[in-house]
Amino acid sequence: MSDDLKTVAPGAATLDRRTCLKALALGAAALPRLSPGAGSPRADLGTVLEPVRQKHRLPALAGAVVQAGRIVSAGVSGVRAQGSPVRATLTDRFHLGSDTKAMTATLSGMAVETGHLKWESAVGEVLEVPGMNAQLAAVTLEQLLSHCGGIPSDTPEMLKLYFNTDAFEYNLTTLRARMIEAWKANAPVSAPGKAFHYANFGYLLAGAMLEKSLGLSWEELITQRIFDPLKLTSAGLGAQATPGRLDAPVGHQLDDKGNATPMYWGAGADIPPALGPAGTAHMSVLDFAAWAGWNAGGGRRGPLLVKPGTLARIHARHVDTGRIPHPRPGVPAEGAYCMGWGLVKFPWSRTELLTHNGSNSMNLAKILVDTARDVGVVLVTNFPGDRAEDALNEALPLLYRPYGTG
Image (cartoon, rainbow, N blue to C red; front, side, top):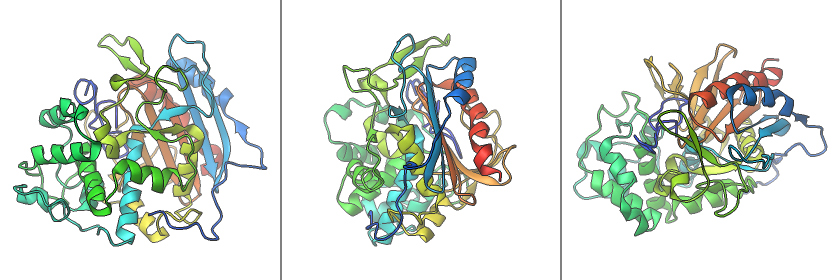
């Protein structure tokens, strides 16, 4: 998600904490596996990141570059919480926010390959919710994942559903179904397939379609079919730190005056867990880089989560975002959207690159993937807002240029 859970293209979903937060893995066979660079030197990015972190006054900043399936540079600077002396480490968990969406899209690709779903499967066809608006029922899985199904960005009605006290009464699969039941009478705000609307609720619908068709919760699916096969051992869902322990960089909430409060654990430390398909994953910067590297390789390196052709469809342009006036932090002024990925031509890149931002309004993460050069870059911080966005935007080309412009 993004700093206000309503972002776009390579945008984080925007669940602003007041407006939305204030606001099947196949066998790896003989394929070579992604490696964290064992047996080869890895450059320390700490000296690159530390001046950026200090300039923008962030608690912690971490980044990594993966090339041809190996992490070639990585580093971290800063502390786990503002005012704490505990230093952040490379194995610490950071929140990914809406960078989780690409994982939900990949899970969808798995379901398509096994015949449990089709890209053209309609919401109403799969979920079979009596009384659902006919236009909403006709929105397809592919349209949901590419934000062109006409589902609006988080509305006041949706926010009431996200933060409903029912969250304490039901399992997450049931809770997602109840949210859909409560919203079923609403029509898309534009004709499906025609316009871009960054919609977290669309990913909630996609997650529910996966659950209905596969018979497992989205939480089980992402754990068993993304985290485990890729050996993302630090990966999990929800707030980064273990309750009672400062064992990860914790997010920070900003008040109206810009004052930051560390959000250690508990319900206030992340978005509602039912929004998992839209953005609740966390992991270390090294594991995040491994995910970037798997995507940069076009799915041709093991494990074979989906066929290369399926991943290419996920990575392909589906809808132009159009020119966005006064974009919010994390949202490019223009670009295109794929499925769980944005597509942007940066001033410092030769071509359009796959990218996405993620934020639960307390953290910020960025991922960049160059499939032509088999390079991935990831950056994470435990701070939100403009300072975090400026810092990560400044650091991104510093990490990409040595490997992505040759």
